[in-house]
Image (cartoon, rainbow, N blue to C red; front, side, top):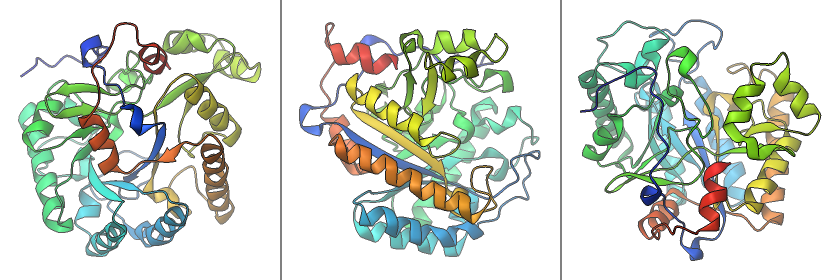
Length: 351
């Protein structure tokens, strides 16, 4: 077991660990939904915030994406997995043969409850090793029993992965982790620092791969990457000014607080620089107004779907096809080893 040191500054993957997509995979995109309880994002974490009413909006969202050929992967946490209505909705979703479920751990609402509720403890990897594993084991078993499928992909709530987490996931039969948000740093709140992580998948241990959430730097100075983003943050309004001047922006692939035009440019940059899988995500409570800061009104919800219409149209124009979880796992199983002179490794890993 690795010694825990906070914050966890995730090291860059070793070159031999980087995975290269098979040529037959092409360039693809995926949509992961952090499928979770409703809570007030402006208030402290609470064990009592376990509402799941927004799940009534998932069937319509699933139908909308399915009509456009896009499978969904729902990463579900304890309040969702213990809600009979939510479980039935998810089981029905899986009948399309392409969508999938995985696991998301929100430790403050996932038993056993042997820790204080706090910002630091909201990152599961900050908990004692045995408690993190106990929560993850219980949740994995619960999802398997409730949904009827073994979850194969994991995302730590608040991206709170730690150095011990991969071994736990491997013991529980997971094949993918998608907890690392390329280029982001949560260390000020006690979370992990991913500024050394790029967009390219890599092996964590035999049979378990990391699939980072995609982050793209755009603008004339985009080669500055995470280091430039950090430096601009030390200047008064530095990041905003750089973005408005078209010099530098950091763009995550999500409809939540990411303008459509910025994401369209990010998609073009990523595709042009060799990123082979674009990993999109959003939170399930955004499917119904009033639960997240991003979708407060019906007008916001309409804008949410217009955002997706624009993104899907651009992906189609660029001939970037959707990928299911099964297709991603199969492709990574067939992934070729790294080559020292691979151009795609240099570009895809550094966005």
